[in-house]
Length: 164
Image 1 (spheres, rainbow, N blue to C red):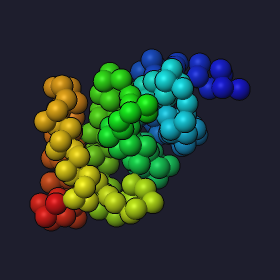
Image 2: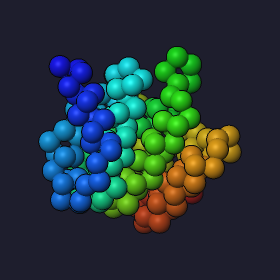
Image 3: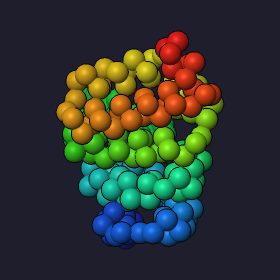
Image 4: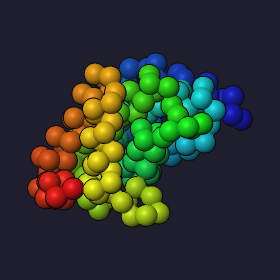
């Protein structure tokens, strides 16, 4: 039931987990947390984001979350305007997760963010990241700068990033 999922996500967001447990949690409930993040009410989305923040902080679990499709909803949350707008505190969590995922060593130039086949280094996405950096608070700015540094540090994405 949704109440149980919300309760479990809330507990996961509060626990301090070691890396092996983070990977196990990412494998077993990562896609469920991503689905809650995409379609739940604000309370559910907050619980899911906090749990995803906990488990995304180690490289192997970040890779599992990327495979489960976390990038597209994270980017959507960061760029959303209008009725789907996340409160700033949750955008900070989304930016933190995205920054954590940058350390996974994935080839972000080949991971599509949606049906239009854009990636994190597509011109439009880079422009939106730069716009957010210049129009948000220090917590989001810092994490998004870490995202850009991660993209610039990868030999597979740096050329796409620079051309964007």
